[in-house]
Length: 512
Image (tube, rainbow, N blue to C red):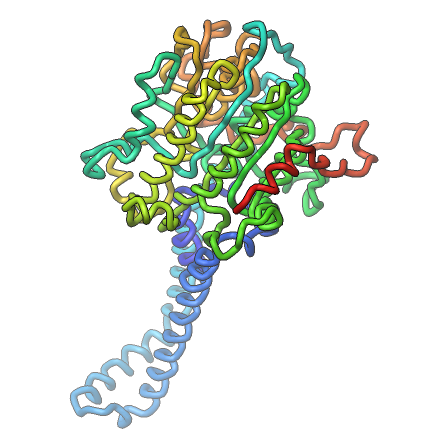
């Protein structure tokens, strides 16, 4: 098990941290049965069944050899009988010396070493004794004053594309640019794309990328498995953190989250509900809204159906005078094999790389739909991968690129929009998105991030990204405090989920 479980996790999810494991033991287990059933099957086979079968086989071989050692004449061939006698002598010597004690200890020690190395356990333990980097670098967005850059802030369309990275654009790896339609948008005035969008630990899996881009903080397990909260149910998700949904709701925005997979998985639904998203849709909610389960993948609503729903939602939101934030999270490009929808197959795509290209086309078509209707005067668009790709069927091609980066696009009708840096992280997206819609935070700082567009109001420290990469997961009492319920809410029951508004009912009545 010490070998099998780490190897399975690494093959499925790439580099995996202890924080990530501990987090999913708390939140991910609630929705694991709602996730891809193939994921569960592969875990049962590779992490449990194969190690158990190997253990039984070794036990059987050991019993057989013990029997032959006591009955040399039982060997089926004369030459085997002679070899058996020699083996018996060797086994008798070993049985009375060190092998029975040393071999199990060697196997156990090697297994523990492999486990420790696979999950960077030493790095995790060392983080408890480092400086509180988070406390020094964190700027509380809840205490920042938002200033309007223009007359009226724009609405936001924010699209997270599962595992989308710039490596898929490399013809040397894939024969042609799989993201050609998205990359074609970069030539438009008012479009910014950062050359080096770095993925750091604490932002390297889906829910962590959502938290880091919307709250400006990493996702780590310290607050959930330390001190007085250890073993207790976390009732609120980062209740002391002020995130994108909180800030926009305070400015009068309506926040909507559309997602193909179950909201129970990894606490995704809890995060958005607790940070003032008014409408939160996942697999179960889509079924209630009339989407047939038979047309879904193992994870949930396919991307073509998701964008069909997103177009309808956007149309209704545009009819209202209220500013809005429409956040969409795709799923079809999830490792290891992706989910090829009938629509993508109809377009002639096949295999995992076909899934990537088709999803990128669907995203580009959605953006082009917004542009064609002249809505960029009211809407700013952000497209980005949630994180780098993990152990998918094209992974060996991806890792040949030494400069893997998260795909990203910022789209507006402001021809003067420009980046002030080429290197960003997930944490920079919160102040960057706020500036993009016309809401500027003091010094361009929020959470751990710096606004990457507009004038530079607070210069980044030297070696900023390298230092953050090394220290961002270190223990922090300040970070842990973000998980503690505010005093005025500690004794109050959890708020009821937001009641559906007319726009919700209208979208639910759309034909499947």
